[in-house]
Amino acid sequence: IFADDTYSKPYFVTYVNSTFFIIPLIPILIHKAYKQPEELKSWRDELRSRAVGRYMPVRDEEDVEEEVNPRASSESVEDDTRIHRRPSVRSRTESQQIDLQEGSAPPLTLYETMRLSFEFCILWSLANYFVSACLQYTTVASSTILTSTSSVFTLVFGVMFKVEIFTFRKTLGIMASLAGIILISSIDLSGRNNDEDHRGDFPEKSSQEIAVGNTMALISAVIYGMYAVLMKKRIADESRINMPLFFGFVGAINFFLFWPGFLVLHFTGIEPFELPPDSRVMTIILCNSLASLISDITWAYAVLLTSPLVTTVGLSLTIPCSLIGQMFINNQTVGVWYWIGALLVLISFIFVSQEDK
Image (cartoon, rainbow, N blue to C red; front, side, top):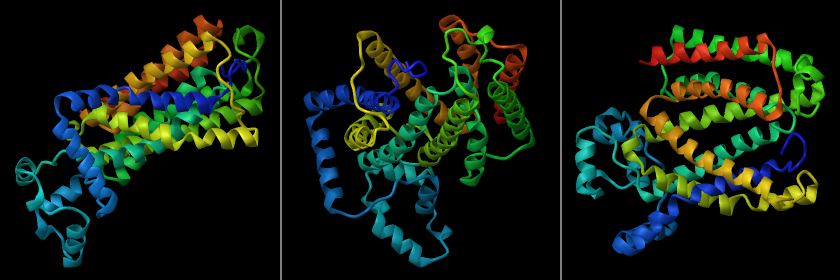
């Protein structure tokens, strides 16, 4: 629907995708309202106190370690800052005190979960907008393969924020991934897959259009690497967060935060607002949104249970699926070098996942 201009509205599709994350929040609120009204009231009281109270950043593992071992801080001023910015250990619940004594990070509070959802919502929406927008100019297979370069950026950001360890095998795996990506991109830009014999039902695109699409996919890969590392850094362990609640807040924040974008894009002429033209297009958008909801929740658990790099490189397994899907849906075929490029990306996953073990 993007490539042939049936409904080329990447912002609308991204907005609907993100708003779909509200779905897990609905049963949670209903359950709290009928079964645990006192907890719902405590949530409301916490948010009210935060609205007029002190700023409290989301605590990562380093923050918790400082609280468990106050002598690790070399400056008393830093200790004072922590006292003003977050409740002391004494003010925590008894279970949280036990967690701190044992050295494990306590669960995120409601406010911390909402704050993290806000940060994640911004990065997620930007990354997915560029993924959707690039499909106007390049193929699904090329988009999938190019977004797999996020493994490189995930490793770089992971090393910077100390959630990944730089090793030779990881580097070798990522270099194999890059080799495959360069091979795929060179075939795309040469136009060898854009002739009548290979293009199938996919609309003809110029080299300039393909370059724009591939660039958007790469921008998405950079942002993806950022938010994968952000999630691991801020949460560290899946037991610290209520994942359905987290994604529910992402959807709610997206709904209220990004609707003005429709006005900006409409009046600037970049993306004039209009609803899907028929039920077929609407069905495609809704099915895509539901699939995105399920896959992103699964992805988030994978990041916390393994590592951002393994999860990111693992997404390269979608490459052969997109190539096969392109053949059946668009009757589009690719040459042997295209498959070799895809194979190199898949091999990189083996290197990285084995090294992480």
